[in-house]
Image 1 (tube, rainbow, N blue to C red):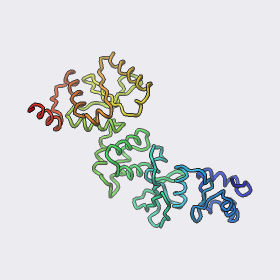
Image 2: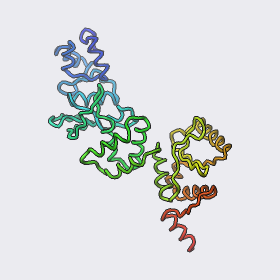
Image 3: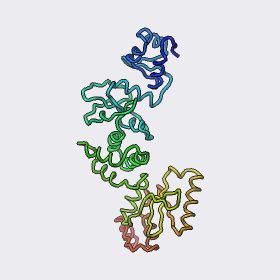
Image 4: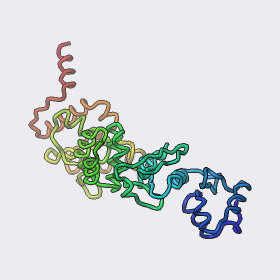
Length: 319
């Protein structure tokens, strides 16, 4: 690579910290002159990306390198936003295009794969980190307002479960903004996330429980030590477990589920278990089964189902 004669130890440290991306000003400040820069580029060790910006590890790639390139190109006072900010805050996100927020008075230079945007909402006042990014709550609202409902629920439940932000902070941010796409939907979802830890649980409450007039259960209750049940109808000793992909993909997870169900059965608790295809594909059938289990255990009902259920029953009776 480059010679130690040209690159000082402090400069090597900065290069490593910035995933191989460096500005000319940084290089000059740490002792590398213009001749040294030119020699490293001419010899193929470094690549000039644009005026004043260099890639010192051109054979390497990755998200962090893309992010540093965008940040250093945008300049002081800027910050990563959108999916890139969410990833830097610890959420698992796919970043196809880097979103950069710059001060409103700046005319940013465009880069391939980078969207430069001027901030008019004060996002930059809360920027944080060496690789500067906007607050997680700002990135969540920016990204979330454009997502389909279940993807939005998934994003918010991930962020809340990992304690990246809080419902209170999200509500305050949505309320403080003059414009939020699908604001009412965002507010309704935030008001509906108590006890919800996955999109599947949200779908159960919306499409099975509420759509069919089932009684309101408790959620995320520890019935036996070391376990939590998704939906608990305590009065009727009925548990509902909702099995999405995560946590139920291997034999050990399945064995833990069986052990828990068997322990609950010994306590005279009945467990009904549903997956994504049940809740999303057959919500009326799931609701009817849960309703019957509740009626058998003393629920007074009445169970009337949803309009689609009633239409289906009417058609069956007529034929």
